[in-house]
Image (cartoon, rainbow, N blue to C red):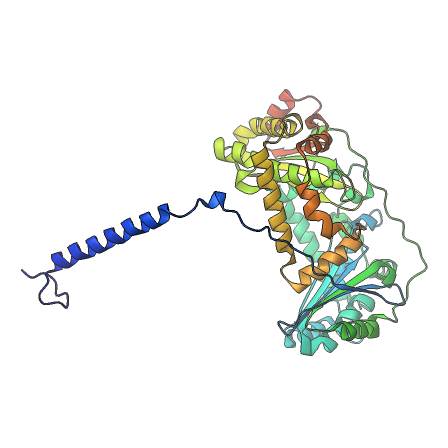
Length: 481
């Protein structure tokens, strides 16, 4: 038999397979020989790359509004971002959630002379995107649009910030949506845990108060107007504009739409910083098959000498992904958690450091003990040189990739000033990370006494009983929703 027709009448199918095999084997052998002559990639020597931060232009309008501008003409797009000194920490007692609702209804509730539905339609026709978010101590509004539509876009954007209409129907809808969101949190243990953690770690500070269904229900339109009048004014706002626009044009258009905005003479006091809370284990009972474990500490601010060592502590402990200590020991080696890690958020005046794990009920106590040990060892044992080097490289790579667009570049600089950091903060970040020593890490880790941690555990009754037998002073709490 001649086999399958190969297109070559003189060769059988088997012969073709044999020839093909010989060719492939010869190629593999040649490739292996070539690879054996290649240098080890771990020993390659190359010139060190030097990254210099692009510098946006900074302008201060006559009314005090700070403007950052960064030109980039690669695409016919423009991004405008405004950061406002507002946030939930300023909410009046009993009306927690006011700042968030104010930001939401500013975006959806229309502007003077234009209903919210028309605003939405106008932006949609321009393919423009408008976003807003309000957190504990700041608010962000942003607009993305084509450069040809900037005049119309920034006209609407400025009126949203300066002259919102706060339509009653949109306020009612926003309140209903927020109330529904709060109601659902009770059935989402992870969201509930991080919400309650924020309240507990801030102790008696105004920064720890949370919106509830009751507080949302008490908020009226006049409250939104009052909140807007207090916080949305040029001395509390910074704006960045980036993309397909020159400096002179950007300054002119922002001055045209924001230059007549006047500042209020009413003073707004910033709430006091949170005190370091007493270390304690809090337990919240939920009938769930998995537990949520959260540890937290008040940590160094971005202006603190321990900030840079803490960036490395966080990466090594839990935010460094698969190679972090918590992930390796708790998840990879022991299989005790489907998610575990750490987080470090630092502001200009204080920071928060946390460690977490989501684990099955039966392993909750073991996971709590492991987190305590891993945190304690950071301050007791020197960090191995290779682990420290790997952490530094990863942090610096991430830092460099935070400057990949015109918008990211200009917002980074604006937020540096918003956070009251030194003018050379971004320029010196790399060298300060590189210069961190193991001794500095050990000193910084003094913040992280496991016995001084605020610990929150959400689990079923059996878990809570086991934790209460194992540790002194466990305090049961109810979710504040």
